[in-house]
Length: 212
Image (cartoon, rainbow, N blue to C red; front, side, top):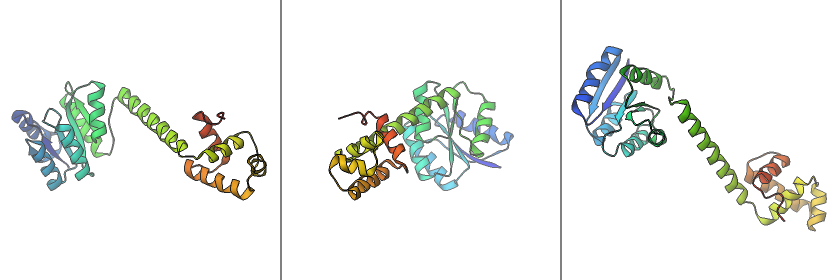
């Protein structure tokens, strides 16, 4: 039986959920009326799921603290506005799923069941936004990594992109072949790639390869 903690500052809402959820096969391990109580109950009782009413004071901060202090407990955010920023705020704070303000009891039951199976639940629109954010974050990370290359390493990678061998690069830059190999090793390590071509493509994608 799935054990849940119900956290909501509105008494009849909290008590109503605590009363009805057992009818759907859930064991209500405890309830909480404040963020502090929600954290304490989650840590002490270690439920499978904590239902957190986002209308509570400082609910996002409470959500972040719960997920940090009790990482194995799935937190489902309740009463979330269907506005994009509200949903994203809950997910980024650590909620595995959410039920919007106009959600039904059936929605809640389905969401809790999914959460206990380790399934994160979000609308296709929100998933799309999260994927775009992840992609943007990855590109920013790539850019920061490329920025870590020294001016000499950039010279070497531009010549690699032109198809030159280590010996040809050494001749062009008037340095030893062993020095070129050292630069190539550093480049591959900094960019976390295994092949020269991958490194050149990464640098080219950020507008460095054609720079003089």
